[in-house]
Length: 155
Image 1: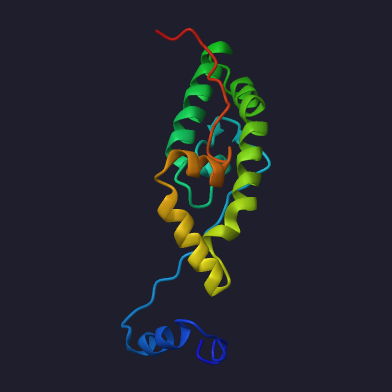
Image 2: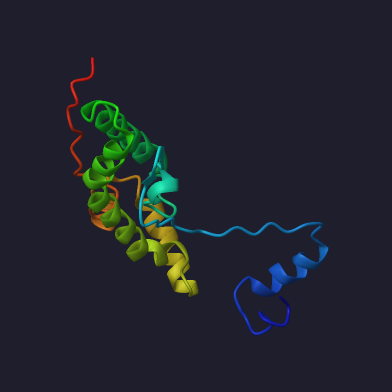
């Protein structure tokens, strides 16, 4: 790593010095799941396993609940036919979640700026995210959902 990042600036030289003294190092990857089908046979994927919508925005739990509700509703509507319910579940949500995934990809670079100015700008924007009109201006509709839950007649 010293060789790869030897010419880097900003905080990198200090990080490399501390890296040598670290007992262990943890790396993680920000990723997004995309699968061609959310169900096969009697198995259906929901939440991040089906379609990780946002990379770092924390939408996974809410969307998993929406997906679970729709899957349960489609099981109910299809008389328990798991194969048909899986197809209907995906047909109802696929376009919505693909749009969410694309929006996340479009916005991903803001989480990992490549310049000192970019970091400053990201931090400034983050500071102002607590002000609703500014958050709306910065985020637009990226985390707002227009998906209307179907009424499956559950009681």
